[in-house]
Image (cartoon, rainbow, N blue to C red):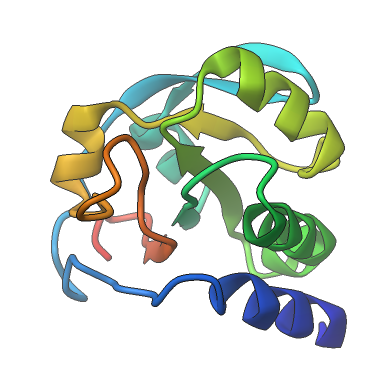
Length: 148
């Protein structure tokens, strides 16, 4: 857990974290294309929530130093999230081709990374102002009831 916290702290230092949606808010539902272990898959938030809570984290750009450190930290912590009954999902505006490679190299096949459309980025209020096409580094924990 210490390695996770250290890695996450380093990764988050690159950008200020901002949980734009308040606790208790309904998480916007989505279906998107994602990658896990280098393979493309369909990712449906409602389906994921049937299995337990979801840790949904947005990251600006695959293969940048901070985002790679963050993905590795999450991959190392996946067993602890699973013990708590939670699943991890990463999201960025990167192309699915990029995310396929990132899911293997940085995420270590541990969790899916999905493509965040401009609409989804707006709905989760994670648009990085002044940096078109990038999200802020923001994480949400979404309960089985679909609330943050």
